[in-house]
Length: 196
Image 1 (cartoon, one colour):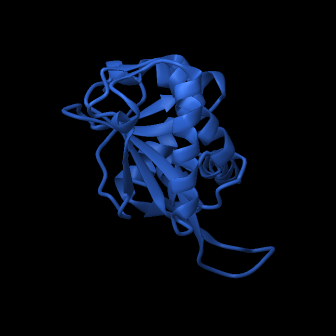
Image 2: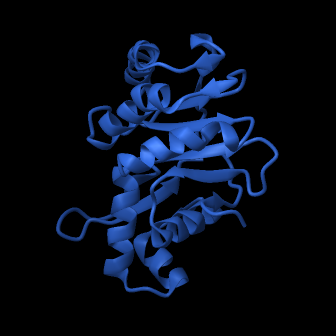
Image 3: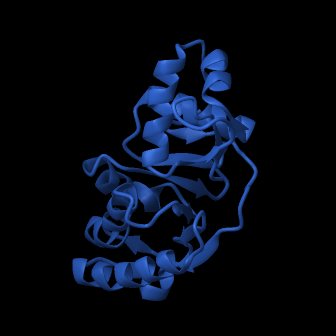
């Protein structure tokens, strides 16, 4: 399995598509990226809480690090800060090569995104920076579609508090969703869902 690759999982929500090629086939400058970011953020904010934006790289020939960071990296930074509520972003790409600069820029920001690459097995991979234990937890949740912290901890053979820390990090990055299902504080119960 390639580094950062995630086994296939079924979509749980209908994402709203945005073709990045609408900004051009060869995307290279920060100013182009800033213009694209304004549209991406407006579309993201127009989604309902829990909505998902699918950024498609199909039709793009060149995606430079400058454009990728300005348009997508900065948007993901805002997303991770909580500025856009419980929304999420995924990327689809015709090739892994096209996502390399984006992945590097996300890693520099200590962020991550899920990317579906056409023809890859498994189709989902992580772009950016995500430690191996977090990738392991994310893979398991994507296989199961949903789980509680206890269910994940038992399956991974780790302590519940360790699993809780992992899953909280994934939630902060908007790579998984959480839903309160049980008692209120201090014994609040959550169920976590794959975003793909």
